[in-house]
Length: 224
Image 1 (cartoon, rainbow, N blue to C red):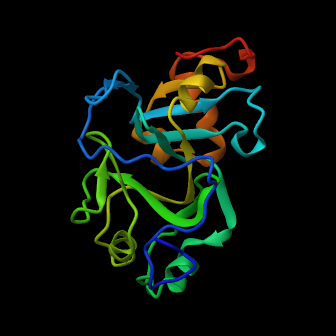
Image 2 (image 1 turned 120 degrees about the vertical axis):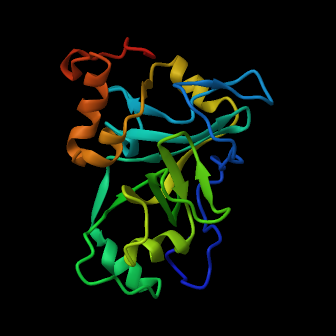
């Protein structure tokens, strides 16, 4: 969905150096899996946790949920950087959707620097919007059309959800290079971290899930 024109669901301009890979529509389970079309072990459904020495300030202490990963690249959503200046109800009205009375507020997040005018909803896998929902694993799915917003607004949406504008993208081999540089730690995703934690606690919670004290991290930390 695009937030700059309610009549359009197509992409807006992003960063040309990082294109979104084609999403694997096959439901997956487990912490990592082999991409059937390549030798890449897919990390879709995992969390990427930014290491302290990651130089890009947009990803400082970021926690990224990987929605797709294969030989063509990877795509994920930052889940711990809310945008306080954007209210979910206002975003709905901008898209011509009237929020239901008593609808709980959903925090809108900065999902990444690519296509920042495009909206994505990460949600529990109990919801599916026809063919517009990518099921990442048994617990989490992603939808990127206004249908999911209409259903959330009317109380017919997923049990758990979060809204993000933009996404993080990696070209072929780029994520693997960043992992080799110890820019990221990979951590199994849990629903309580994605949907149940306050944004400011997700980075530390993801590390502690792997028994890591955030204060002990250094640039020599690598993939878990």
